[in-house]
Image (cartoon, rainbow, N blue to C red):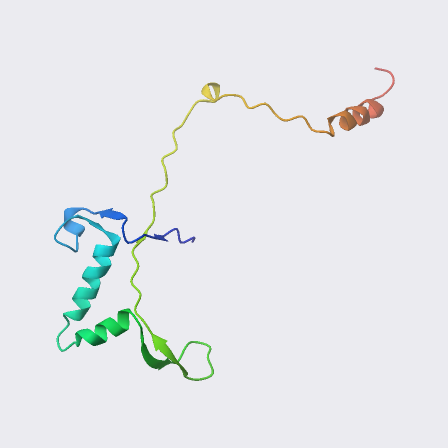
Length: 126
């Protein structure tokens, strides 16, 4: 299945149903939602706000054991929050064949050649 979600810019506006909202309003920008998520993370009990800033900005040193790797790999971790949007498929209006404009077929440079071959392949009695 194709993933049709695309990231939103920080200034793009989001509107959700009241029962699905995470913020106090049902309309906000993508950047406001990301900021709210960072604020929520910084309000976890016993969480150092400087550490939260490091996690979301410059990253923190650590190591990972990834699938298929032969061992631990040193590096940095960073939390990146993006808001993505997937548009609904546009509704296709049904139109009758008679109301659709007829699109002329372009002439092919091979039409003359096809016509000659057809004439040569016809029996001479006709």
